[in-house]
Amino acid sequence: MAKPLSASKMVEILRAEGLTVHEVRSWRTHNRNSKGAWGPVNGVMIHHTVTKGTEASVNICYNGYSGLPGPLCHGVIDKKGEIHLVGNGRANHAGLGDSDVLRAVINESKLPHDNEADTDGNARFYGFECINLGDGKDPWPEAQKEAIEKVSAAICRHHGWSERSVIGHKEWQPGKTDPRGFTMDGMRKRIAQRLKGGGGGGDTTPDPKPVPKPKYVPFPGSGFFHTGRKSPIITAMGRRLVAEGCGRYEEGPTPEWTEADRRSYAAWQQKLGFKGKDADGIPGKVSWDKLKVPDV
Image (cartoon, rainbow, N blue to C red; front, side, top):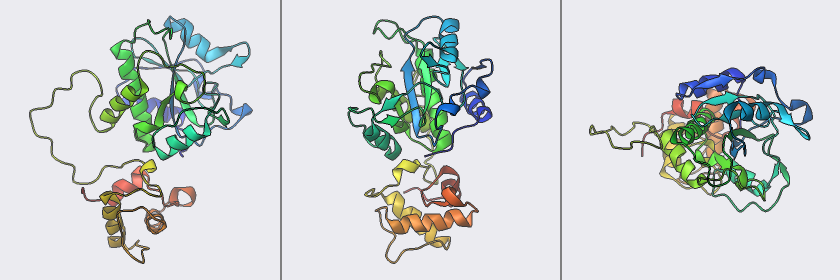
């Protein structure tokens, strides 16, 4: 779970990812917050608009229509791969979806089949509408798919999420088909590659120069740390916590994530000055980077 991005931070991280960003009218204060919760956020949801033309599509997503007021998403991704921000806060894009899917997104685990509509997705997901007719024939230009990849990676990187925090509307709500024309599994592979430091599409010819192995383990995402997870990374983390005087282990540390790991990490977060929910013992990117866990 994460605190939603501010409008300024959203613009900042998208432009830092190399995207062209257009701020549409009063998007910074345009939302549906008066109708329900916005946050904590857990992921990014991708849609297609079933419209054509940039101006018309952006206007529909900003204004909404009879029976469904705007904003209908947070940003519109056009065919050129440019981003039009239309909302900041709760938006009418996800609707009710499957609580089991939300749980998988939070845990960053394999998605189950969506067969229920019992959970408010508008409170939990950033939404991006991509201009496409959704008929299976309207093409998806590479620039547009690359923009989807970049938008998703930028938000995931900021929150410390993996590519598993990005889903399609069709994976959330029974009966939905969007986005149609590419697979979400394929898009998640692109996002994963970008999060590792490379672009997901285009020329993937390797650099002839050897890339040095990172000295420290990069942040694996908060969803990595859950009951039942076993990894040498967890052992290495525990040893660093002990070295920092934050060990709360009676035995270990071991490769399996336990309550002792959580308590130890909470002590580390407190040592760094974090409080409340920011010191709950679940690693976040800032505290992880400061811990400097040796690459195993």
